[in-house]
Length: 302
Ligand SMILES: [Zn+2]
Image (cartoon, rainbow, N blue to C red; front, side, top):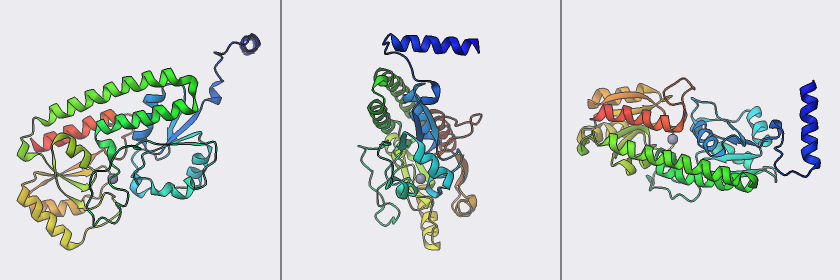
């Protein structure tokens, strides 16, 4: 009790003397809610210890098929700042965002990036391809949008946010060089990707892969292939000589196994693309997730 009284006295003493550097108590920290765990991790790197960052979607859950519970809606309404990927990834948020509170800041992390061309027959792709984050160079734009948003809502943190962003961008540059270096182990004619859905386009563009096809020919995982699409993909895999089909963590392997059996490709499971692993897993941060996927891809193709 004595200690609490003492700190109160010190606090009011500073306040009375007009000192401007008194920090608000920890409970008054800004609350920032990022929608996906990888986005929460990127945001936390920019935010440092000035704000508390949480993820709305728990790790291991696919944002393409996510549905809001009433508790989620309450969390969304309570947060001072929301950080979205954007680009059509979070369609479940539309009803909530249309009635967001006036004081709440919404940061769209991918704002300013241009979508790569998508298959025009993909009905789920009205906003283009939302998987910008699978190229770390795109994530530098995320960092800039997050830095600008946090600085707007918390101008006293401007210097800290700029410094945190600079450091994290350096790590993104290192990651980019590391991936490019690793991919050199794969002969160019074997840099072929077949995935569960069309999520690896930006990664492929950046590191010289060709996307041969996807089990679900969509930029969302919420679709299913027809028998004709399945046999077309088997043909494409055979013709291209693609060695492997890469599946994201919670993808159903049945279709891929069937395609693999008829095309001689092997199935590599458990890539982390839309979510991080638990803290003690192999992909607990965005940077680790990208390294982990790259290692799996290079080992399967080289
Ligand atoms: Zn996706």
